[in-house]
Image (cartoon, rainbow, N blue to C red; front, side, top):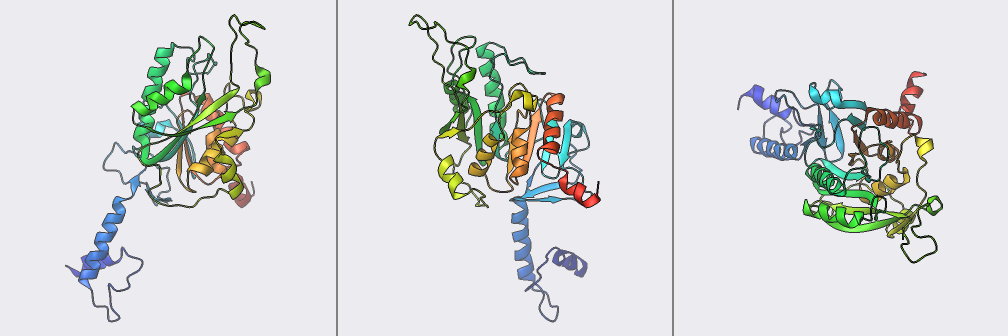
Length: 345
């Protein structure tokens, strides 16, 4: 081995103890062993994003829970079509304005936890989605995005899926049972179901046959959070948990009681409260884990990520909702607070 090459190899290690003795003599066997260890370690690094241009150096690598950025300090996205989909990025938060079914911004097997509340198909007036299609079409759409989520999740990745228990509008349907069945068909494994008591019984207006047994409606004023996982429920690698004893005892109960979110206050037709992703994040992920919301909407999941030291990625097809999520991160999450303090702005 040439001296210049040896010097270059040794420079890769911060700790050279044992590689060189006190007289500077090289221990070749130990050097080769260290290089093999380093090579194996680098294989554990997962490229967070795909790069169509294979000649590009990866600007962002994820090694366990630490993000290592390249010298240029640019967002970890390519400079071509993917870059055009990046709507907002700040430190540990990314928002993509893209169709989740078509996006290629995210790498397979890269997500620790997915939290989302998809369209319910109950004729909610979204800006860029028809929420009143046939139930068969709705289930077909559901199968596609569930399969996409499955590909993106790590082998020990988890999925918190907020959906209705059932629905009466447009005909009675067992939504939770049907979606859970589809999830298992595409590969997800079932762990449990949390009942979310949204406490909104006062908003009920449909009764069917009032005070009559002829055709009454039975409506449960709850939603569910179906807990799924990809291959392994037990995490492959341990990490830092930030959940308190009180939270753990309360949240491992299968019934959660907290209010829903105000549409008027948030400015979105179907927002869920930050409390929902906050609980899911603290109960089912480690500090520094990567969390994805494929139907970002008003940005509640990213707010919870920001407030609880997780890396958050949100995708939404509607540009206005991406802007809404960004504004909430700035206003409620105070995402620029440290920058204001340091610059005096």
